[in-house]
Amino acid sequence: MSSSRSEMNGGFDPAAVPPFPVFTIRQTDAGDTLDGVPIEPAHGESDRHRAATDAAAQKAAEQGHEAVRVRAHLSDGRSVDFVVRTTGEVYDTTVPDEPVKPSRKKRALILVAAGLTGVLVIGGGAFVLGHALGDEEPVAVETTPPPPAGAGTDIPVGLPPAFSSTAAWSAQVDDKAVVRELSDGRLLTITEARTLTILDPDRGEPQWVGSSAPTDLTDVHETTWQGRPVLAAASSQSLTLWPLDDTDGTVAPVSVDLDARAEVTYAGTAPLIDLGDYTVTAPATESSEAHRVTLPPGAVPAAAGADGVIRSLTDEAVWTTNPDTGEHERIDLATPEGADGAPEDVIGLTADHALAQWSEDGSSDTTLALIDLTTGTVAAEATARPPSDSDVLRSDPDAQTAVIGDVFISYGDDPAVVDLDGLDVTAVDGRQLYGSRDRTAVTATVTGDETSVEDYPLYSPDDPSPVLVSDDAAYVVHTTVDETYLYRADRTPSKETP
Image (cartoon, rainbow, N blue to C red; front, side):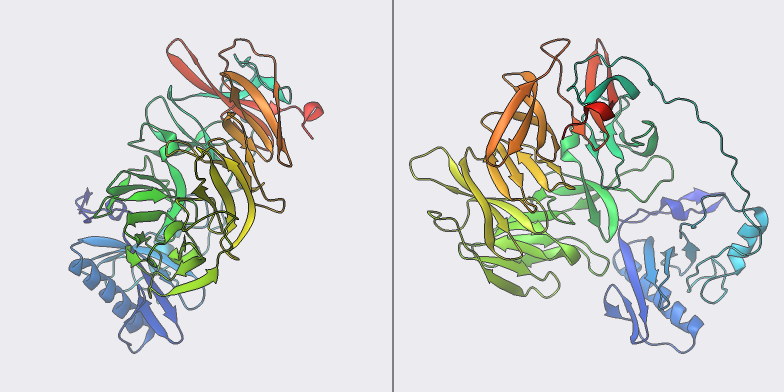
């Protein structure tokens, strides 16, 4: 990914620099580093900053970039974001704490009141952190916002009795759209204009937009890259990233070449890029670029955790591989009774939990075991139809439950692996499931190792089940003629499920 120059009023536009790569400078009393490599010491505070930015500019030139983004972690705990060009100019891109646009006087102060040494933003060879001085911000006047679009309309499908039949809001979406709840509670979907869009769950209004959406939202995952929150989607040989902390207009994706065919999963805190032959690509972190790492012979990758550490399984052990040193740590794996050899497949659930499967002789079913990757123990197991490559993992991270294919998994305080016997699940709310059986919308409750299924009144046998259920609402997608809408149905307090 080469950076490019862009004309802005006849000059360079730092906003046009791609969001990746991001170089990381760390300043400590023991010395300064650039992406973990020591920076040659310099005398004086301003010389120290110049040495750091010069090192970043030199590294950018060596990698073929004209400009790159840099994050500096200062010795006093602050962080500074900036763009540095190979010619040495530095542009402050630190997002201000204040949401209100600075006054003209305040903008002038930002140029001269640097948090480090008072150098100019485009002074070249040193970085800055602007802080507000002087003016008090204007006090916002509270006003009553208009009702959200679609509020009060009848939802044209039947819903489980715990939810209102009147929409809190509606939003037009793609005819194949689903919706996903992000870690901050906002909603990710694809609009009718084929953009990735994050909606405010209270009003259904866009708060972030990304271009070039894939065809299927299930291909898009919330994760991190170089310490930044991103949405990610993988093809066989590349990883497409949309930075979530970029909120300036429509966000264009960045493509990361994987240099080989790969299978990418997202159970941990970063993408797990499996190249086969016991080799993975460790994800880029704040301190290191993406690079290949060799796993122990016979290991099946499970998840990428904090700082890019890779967890994998063999027939007798759980391995943790340090991506920086390549060293492996082992803990014994207590495999299920009758399981022979390394698991044939491993489905990561989180950075600390995975679902491993072993075939049973003479049977189409498999032994499925919930593995605690921190202890190497089997928390729960069952015999069931194995999930297929096309099955989508649906989860409720707060409740620590998930469904993939015909299998329900609880990986929290009450671990369980339960065969759902053909229930097609579309949404997971703890142990309450929403989906269909025999193509008819139903709800299901998992209690212990048993599943009870109930239908509910529908307007049409073809009514879809909810695509997402949160603590306070259900969301359903419905198409009429040539328009598709996402509806929010609030949970009715008097009808809340236990």
